[in-house]
Length: 104
Image (cartoon, rainbow, N blue to C red; front, side, top):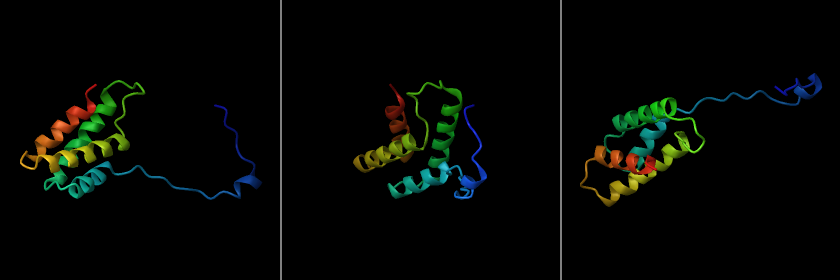
């Protein structure tokens, strides 16, 4: 739709680039660990599953964002809350932040 092939002389000036989808679980696990969470592996898996299901099953409206950017924001907020309330269990910290960050 509106795309045309580049001429061969112009194609020769460009190099092919390979892109991969980022591994959200590894990113979440490392961020949680760096924020001070001890059980970062299982919490990251739960969070990535939640974001994946939300992206697939909830409305596709543009103001919903369940991508890497919003996940990173939630992880940083979770680290702030964990440092603020160190006595609260880690699972509860993450659940509270997910609720607060994703509720309108």
